[in-house]
Image 1 (spheres, one colour):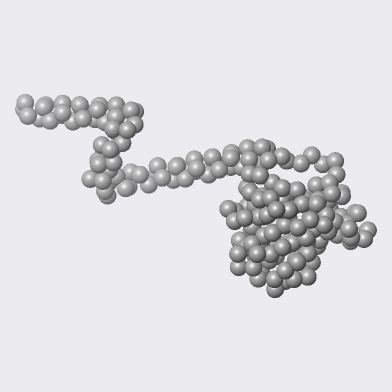
Image 2 (cartoon, rainbow, N blue to C red):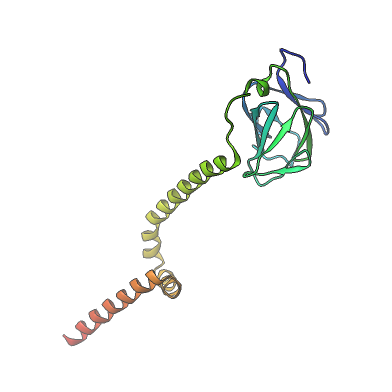
Length: 192
């Protein structure tokens, strides 16, 4: 436990940055190699640019991974969808770096008591909505490019439609209607 009036700190316990202290001046911080991260682990090549986030909560921090790279909190893995709580005096591993949290009596973690924290389900729901919107945005862009692709690569487009027609009933029905229409156009042309 740190003395009153000092901030909460993450202390590096091993590696080239051993002994470095990162004071916490905000209720939510980032941990990673990027220069903007509060806990900047620049010398650990196994750490991602923004590897994890830490959010102040009463008597500690909620740790959440932001990538698929591992974050270990007191021997348990924290992921994008499963956060872990790191208390004062406890150790977490990011990349090859071990960090110990030391909380102050008037640091960010003690000041955040009583603030409702987002649970894992709420966090996942919020982020799944963001992901869904990104997917829809990419599909919209793809739909704009599709006509250009179809005109340039008409043979590949026809093959894809034939393949999909066998697997997707809606496409199969549309394909059958197109074939019927083409047959009627050819039959009309032959009659004349």
